[in-house]
Image (cartoon, rainbow, N blue to C red; front, top):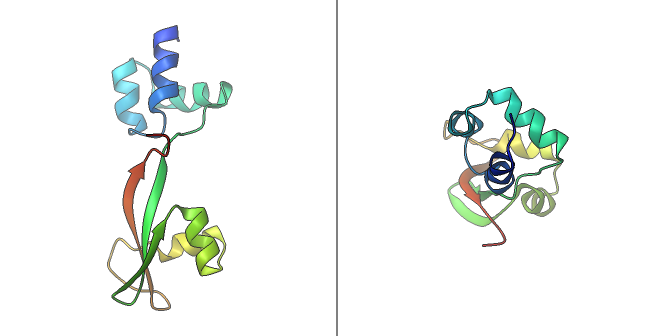
Length: 104
C-alpha cells in the first residue's frame, strides 16, 4: 500500500539511494519502487558525475550529457569509456565520481 508518506519519500530520494535499500525501508518489493516511480512520472533528482582523463591527464568533469558533448560522442560510446578496471579505451578514461543533487 502506497501511503502519502511513502510517496513523499519516493519523490525525495528516488535515484539517490539504491532501490534495494529503499524497498527495504518502505517495506515493498524492488519492482514496486520502479513501478510506482514510473506511474507517478518521478525522475531522479540526482545526477551522476564523471571525471574524464586522456591517459593519466585530467581533462574535465560533468554529468553524462556534458561529457558526451565535450567528447563529441553518443551516450553508448561514453559509457564504454567508464572504466572500473582501470583500462583505457582510445586513451580516454572516465571515472564515475558519484551522485550529486543539483538543487542543493
